[in-house]
Amino acid sequence: MISTVTMKWDGKALELIDQRKLPQTEEYVRCTTSDCVAAAIKDMVVRGAPAIGAAAAFGYVIGAMENSKNLTEERMNAIKGKLAKTRPTAVNLFWALDRMHSKFISLKGKPDFMIDKLNQEAEKIAVEDIEVNKKMGEYGQTLLSNDATVITHCNAGALATVDYGTALGMIHAAVDHGKHLSAYVDETRPYLQGARLTAWELMKLGVKTTLICDNMAGWVMKTKKIDAVIVGADRIAANGDVANKIGTYSLALLAKRHNVKFYVVAPLSTIDVKIKSGLEIPIEERAHDEVTSIRGVKIAPENVGVYNPAFDVTDSDLIDAIITERGMLTYPYETKIANIVKGGAVH
Ligand code: MRU
Image (cartoon, rainbow, N blue to C red; front, side):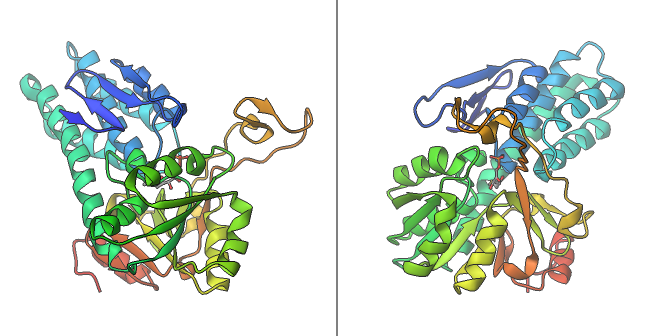
């Protein structure tokens, strides 16, 4: 059983808060088929790297239940493939599916309790996500003074995870320590995760929240006292380059210029050591109408050319610290990342 605002799982069905409708409407989509879970990930009902991973793990369990009469490796490969092709950038999706599939392979020949065990593994992924976020929050909050003002981008909050959040988890932990934080929230065009989701979550946490358009961040850094930019990540390469929501790279450049600290908060499941540098990370391109329209209202001439990459890559030398559940890493990252993913100490 998992029950958070982002997702609810009762062992049979996965309910996902429909993030496309927030903050105006709090409505859940109930999935009892793996097709439904795959569509929910693809269509952004659920989004954010760790949340996508956990949803896919539950989708895998539902896929196993659909095939319970003939639970072959071939069928589970097909379920895994269907869930994996929903979104390309956030590595947590593939990490969670690989973990579920390894569990399936390790249980082959023991079909009686296969579904129970897969269910337990998916719930473990979800529970661990919350624990890990709280640990990162604790480490991260030590970097923030009592009255820090931060900028955040996209949504790396409870909604982007099973619960608590990564970047917003750090803010949450600071608030729990009695700190009085203020946050500027980038609206995050074109999908407006900042305006719709992050502003909603931060206000609920009692953080003084100011919404800005993305192109205002430089001026805000120049004219206000900003202590840090805090973001999440969708995939971190072996050298510490970070793929995150489009606009993150520009923020990092602006932060460098204005001597503002730039922090990335992400679990180890977001690190992909198979990818040497950020340029190898697949970047999702999304529909043109996300750019030519705002919430269904056309704002651009018919047939204008459009480029809509959903993510960008921030070079590791622009990042002051990557905060993980095992501690904080600082630039240069390559050796430290290689060490931490093998279970070694954090230096
Ligand atoms: O396209 P989205 O909304 O799934 O993108 C989400 C982000 O870029 C988040 O910043 C990232 O997944 C980190 S969430 C903890």
